[in-house]
Image 1 (tube, rainbow, N blue to C red):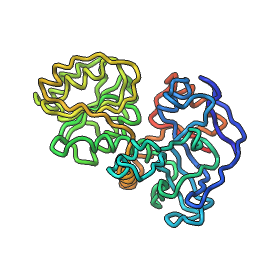
Image 2: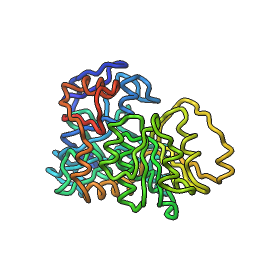
Image 3: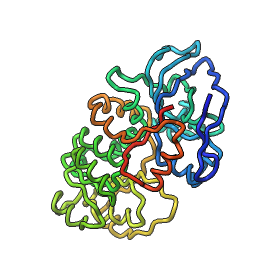
Length: 340
């Protein structure tokens, strides 16, 4: 079968590789679509923390089950599925507490222990394979993984603070956080970015304000929309050098800042407001199985709106073009997928 690799920084290639052989608890999926994540861009640039070229790309996918192991009971051949792309031990303290993403024995796609998803056939343990409802197409189903990231972040905001939300960063995860927050009961949501295309997408998906921080005074907008109490919570999905300062300045007293952005460079910010306002600064890493299930339910509730977020679909032979477009931001995009 064919697999799509980052051969070296800035260069992709297609190789012939062995088709996976499944064990008794696994299923084999004929991959239809694989999504390009920001982490794939890091791999493409040679900047990922542990996935280094040459490596198979991808961890988001949908497809059709073509083979099942003899112990598999939850899915069958012919089922349309998505995959939660992390397999955990389910025995350690973290797993038992519902934090599978922190399992020390976890394995993820695109590493020595598990193939990446930019392949024609992908193997996965039955326990991380999820059947798609009939009304969720294979293209929309690709959004389950990135939406789960956003759902996990929103779920970290206490119920008594689910009122006025500020989202810093209007890329795919930011837009999905907006959609999740609106469906989870937030009254008002402001989204910021420096790309007007992203802000238009935010407005089209019910953002109460979409703010270009290069042209508008964010503090003024927050006060206009939320009043002097400011935001009850902030989600940070962007990586500007002053992004934490923006979050801390615009969250209200005892508010919560959820940090998703994977920034490896040190950020400088004033800690005094954290103490003075008793701000909760919380990290958010991927998701657990409940977040993934909730993401699928959200997609199922409004398939057409979510599917519109898939703005580009490339054939596997054109992956280099896809990465060039995304890296150089040659045009506006939200979610880019590859048809395998």
